[in-house]
Amino acid sequence: MESNTVNKALTSFTATGKTSDDGDIASVMGFSGFGKKARTFDLDAIFEQTRRTAIERSQHVLEERQKEIEMKEEGESSKSVKPSVQSQREKAASSRVQKSDSSSDSGSDSDSDSELIGPPVPPQHAAQQGDDDDELVGPPLPPGYTGSTAHSDDDDDEEGEAQDDDDDNPVKRIPDTHEITLQHGTKTVSALGLDPSGARLVSGGYDYDVRFWDFAGMDQALQAFRSLQPCECHQIKALQYSITGDVMLVVSGNAQAKVLDRDGFSVMECVKGDQYIVDMANTKGHTAMLNCGCWHPKIKEEFMTCSNDGTVRTWDLNSEKKHKSVFKPRSFQGKKVIPTCCTYSRDGKLIAAGCQDGSIQIWDRNLSVHTKFHCRQAHTPGSDTSCLSFSYDGTMLASRGGDDTLKMWDIRNFRKPVNGVSGLTNYFSMTDCCFSPDDKLLVTGTSVKKDEGNGKLVFFDRISFQRVYEIDVTNASVVRCLWHPKLNQIMVGTGNGLVKVYYDPVKSHRGAKLCVVKSKRKEKHAEALTQDYIITPHALPMFREARQRSTRKQLEKDRLDPKKSHKPEPPVSGPGRGGRVAAHGGTLSSFIVKNIALDKTDDSNPREAILRHAKEASENPYWIAPAYTQ
Image (cartoon, rainbow, N blue to C red; front, side, top):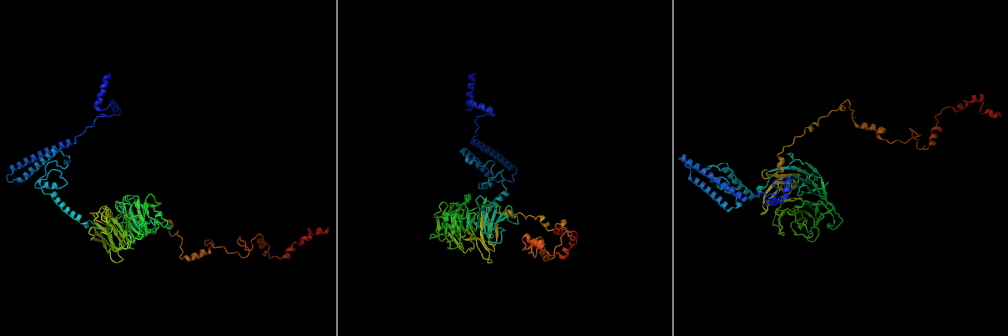
């Protein structure tokens, strides 16, 4: 018995590769076949088998096809089929079979996906099928068939050619066929911001307002869903959403930048520095008006501001008590200069600032002591450089000067500009320039004085710097411009309080297309009813108090009434009146003297008053006479 159990254990061990303990576990846990090796599939063999089956089927179909053709030839001697078609078919079929045989012999799995499986394709489609990436699915088309597919292929070719033209000509990709106008206010729109998804637009202006526009929530009335004044009475200089789109930076004319959430509630306010400290690196924050600000393109908690105190500072969203680092632009003599605009490079490693002495200074983000690139005479000294913008490939920098110029710089050779154009009027210290999403065009706006023409949005070719296109926006200056890469729509802020959104129904996505299709909401009827009078019982004439014709008479009456007029009480004349004591009768004795002792109101004769008792005294002498008798 013992030997049998041992043998069983050994056999179970050799069969499953496990000891008999696994059998116990299997019985406890309820597994069947616990510990057996999983079945493996040989994929190469399966592919090979599938390929061979396909070849056999296609040969079978081919033979049937040939038999049908032979039958037709015998039956219809008059209508003879051209032999070339048949020979072409035979050649195609034989080449298909040879190809499949050779591929099956080579056994390369990489080609197996690209090969055709199924019946052969007619010859006129063989060429198309070789060119197309999309393989035809389904049974082959009849030999003489020229239907919708051929036609659509021609259309595709034409569309492809048109597409090639579009690719060559970036002007055709400018989305300006349609526009909508959002009314921000009546004063200059000096800041625009779009969140990364393009769902929400914010606009800020010289009227201190920040307005929130939601494209998905708006209808054709195009009303902002929120308006607030985050910085009291300071003009808004810049607005920008962070890379995640959950918070927004607000840079205004005061010394403290603010960070708001998507609904406009304050998240953080930068600290103000001590203006009596000479070295600006030793203060915790800015001490003068801000000029510009932006978020880091990679780090979602970091942003940067520049100010009239002559510093560019980076901040961390989580520590509002102090800045992160300070960059101090210097003039040729080593004196401080005021940075008017600032930006990060696309990779976030460089920090660039345009200064009032006409220079553009670029630092490494981690080394704030010396500049990495420096161009002294980038623009005219004393003019405010209004914008710096890096290209999407990160090699070029565009600068918009207050000296009416637009220049392009190559960072790798920063001594002189690659290209430049002048005569672009600029009256604002925040006039934008930006690159198109395909990096082939450069866009900026022009300023005009009141009633002296229209402000324009001007497009330049990045390489040749030729003016390739322009849009007449409105009869005021064009200050801000944004070209959102996801929406492919251009937002423009103007000097007369408008925000214009340019889009193309074909080339653009979402954004303004969402709100123009929604009809205006009907006004609620409750608002119309408020005009009628609601009659309550006490509003009827019989209950109503007569209203005074003139209020002057009523006022005179009220003046005479001491309670209504709160008239001070007049001084007491003579002895006390009305419960009050006269001025010189302050004590109780004087009051008694005045009212009783000196009261002259008894007008009777004093002699009569005394003689009244004479008769009684003589008849009954009680007090005086008995005393004298003794």
